[in-house]
Amino acid sequence: MEPIEPVEPDADRALDLLGIGLGPFNLSLAALADAVPGLTTAFYDQRPDFHWHPGLLIDGATLQVPFLADLVTLADPGSRWSFLSWLKSRERLFPFYFAERFHVHRAEFDAYCRWVARSLPSTYFGRQVDSVRWNPAHGHFEVDHTRLDPHGEAEALGRTCARHLAIGTGSAPYVPEPLRPLAETPAAPVVHSAHYLDHRERLLAADHITVIGSGQSGAEVFLDLLRARPAGRERLTWLARSPAFAPMEYSKLGLEHFTPDYTRYFQGLADPVRDRLVPAQWQLHKGIDTETITAIFDELYRRTLDGGWPDAVLTPGVTVRTAGRLGSHGVELHLEHTEQGGRTRLVTGAVVLATGYRERPLEPLLAPVRSYLRRDAAGRPLVDGRGRLELDRSVTGRIYVLSPSRYSHGVGAPDLGLAAWRSASALNDLTGLLTGTEHYPLPARTAFTSFGLDPGADRSSNGVPVGTARR
Ligand SMILES: Cc1cc2nc3c(=O)[nH]c(=O)nc-3n(C[C@H](O)[C@H](O)[C@H](O)COP(=O)(O)OP(=O)(O)OC[C@H]3O[C@@H](n4cnc5c(N)ncnc54)[C@H](O)[C@@H]3O)c2cc1C
Ligand SMILES: NC(=O)c1ccc[n+]([C@@H]2O[C@H](COP(=O)([O-])OP(=O)(O)OC[C@H]3O[C@@H](n4cnc5c(N)ncnc54)[C@H](OP(=O)(O)O)[C@@H]3O)[C@@H](O)[C@H]2O)c1
Image 1 (cartoon, protein in one colour):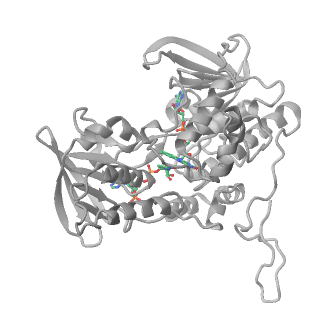
Image 2: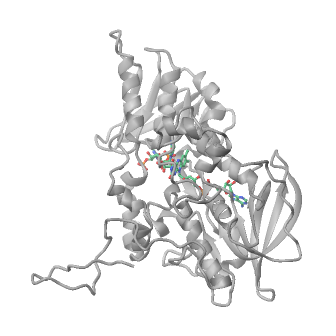
Image 3: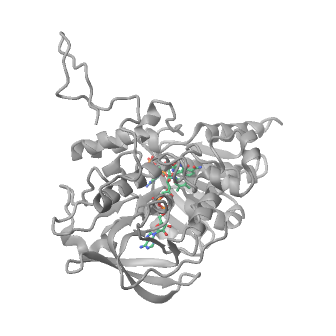
């Protein structure tokens, strides 16, 4: 299939749906919307093309979910935009079949998504959305955007009108406060893991490298650096704030936290309970997959075979309190051990901040519609059970949140396994409104675990409820 040149959305007619951001979540929505007859859509992304976390596309890194968590399959396995369809278009179905791979390469998923993004007629790159305004007289949103050239320079301003919106602006790299001054100094070899591959050679040229953070990114970066350094002269330090280099939960029933059933249950909980749960469930969404832990251990072990010991320090339970620059080539980190209480100083030549991501706040984009947003006690915009922002009744347009935060949707918020479902749910809500029918029938039940008790259920003779909640 040849890439399609996008035709400009008609400036005089409001679209049914405009998507802001084209990461996997809104791309899933664009792919599923493509099969809804008569629905007019456009999806804008500020980048020049689709690239999925390119700075961490380390050779050999795999997806953490099965390939069935592609853009469409879990809602519509017959879609022409499935991962298998992409393999077919590349004449790679037989090699894939014999490879028996459930967790495909991240590079492959990236290429598959780019194929979908380039093939769909509704996707537009080089469009940065600046603001969203509600026009009550016309009953549509006015979306102001800037057209960017391939280098990110502004070329022209534009406005697109749409009756409904889908926000999928994802997350941005997070740098902890004490380390911000270091990361903001351009000459310094201090980089966030999101940009790792762009700076890999510069980092490897340093005498000593420190990786901060023990999520999957930190582990993949540490492994890649370890493999690139000569045995006995690794000169690497890996610091984790958590008490251990912990594995990510991947048991079958644990994975049921990434189902629509759990999301519904979570959304029904009181705000303070949800706020407590997300950090308590860290091992479901932080941590390192066991294959990567094994690969790191094996690589370290291999380096002892000739009787030596790798020059690598792996220390959990460490907080970086402050950091400073030492001359033009060095960085000084002030460390504290959370269990011992002791403090020390580490001088290093380069730092990789594998310190995670934070959801991009909706507020700057939605500033002009701020007065229509309903909020929780902490002032955060409320998202309803159908994934829509709760708006003042006077607003007839709907705003679907495709990249929600963990506090509103639970641990599964950024999980690719929920992308097709979330998109199909949004489309069902929209087609229900426009045509009275739901385009993608979805199953009522998705987990064996019953999350929560049904207060109205029958009780056995000893008073224990025998039924559980099911919607
Ligand atoms: C390295 C890495 C690997 C991951 N691997 C997995 C995995 O294997 N399995 C899994 O389930 N999850 C994984 N995740 C988590 C999650 O699936 C991804 O972060 C995913 O990319 C989230 O998709 P998204 O569509 O919400 O947002 P993003 O992918 O962050 O995309 C958002 C898009 O919105 C655009 N945008 C933002 N603001 C604007 C604006 N104002 N105007 C126009 N465009 C805008 C951005 O340019 C960006 O392209 C991974 C995360 C990372 C960081
Ligand atoms: N191959 C893949 O598919 C792949 C690759 C990379 C990432 N991912 C996914 O992408 C998501 C993000 O992963 P990530 O590893 O980038 O981020 P993450 O899981 O959020 O981990 C961030 C790490 O940084 C630490 N940290 C944060 N602030 C700190 C501070 N002030 N001082 C010291 N340490 C600090 C955290 O420690 P605390 O735990 O103490 O907060 C944590 O260890 C995850 O869902 C992950 O699974 C997938």
